[in-house]
Image 1: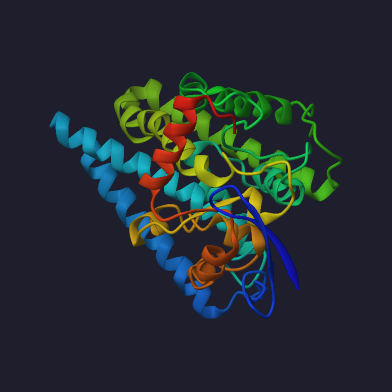
Image 2: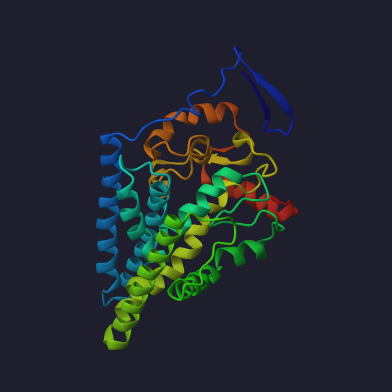
Length: 321
């Protein structure tokens, strides 16, 4: 097997076997086992406990304690979407139904509609490196890489407005998917989940006008506003400054080895090459495949700080993504 790759210094080369083995394990499939289910359920349990701790702190009367709680809740809402991402790929449970049930709940705080996200995200995997890429979150790599554009992208709350508009379209039967045809069953799921989210928003508004506005502010609105840029930071390294004009996963995607904390908090999103190489593999299997990524992939960082330094250099010198 022959694999073309680009060296870290910008040169090109060819990786051939047997001198360097092809990445067989990297692209290998793996079924979800009972053990994988337990790992994912433990992650959900930890999320639940930490969200509860954050909520208790957020309603505290001491300003600094409340602020710390709001930040923790925002971090957990962000983490929940990363767990939802695993549900999108049906790599958390052995059966399909629990993915939707759990995935819908995980996305509610950040207004992420599970079936809509799943439709767009799977198309992102299919069309990455082509003009048909439909990534749901992240930085538009077709735009100039400037500090101003990064900041505008990080604090882009237009998605929240778009979701609310889509709720209205679903309620009136006018919702359409602009990127491709949608199977009737998938469309029904998307409409129902938008209406569910709309019901939650109406309920939150009702609580706010009946004297519980402070709770809604501390437990949902402020964490939501913080979570938008926090989630952007998690998603940013995935493909920026990579070779996005190719469909070769070893060139168009980035992995970051990171620490146990970053791997947990992003739910393995740091190992993004490994994920794109075999998207249905349970996330807890990805670390064992990182050695092949380090050996063959173009865009691999040791830490998030290394990525930040690379990004800052690109912004300072006017490099385009």
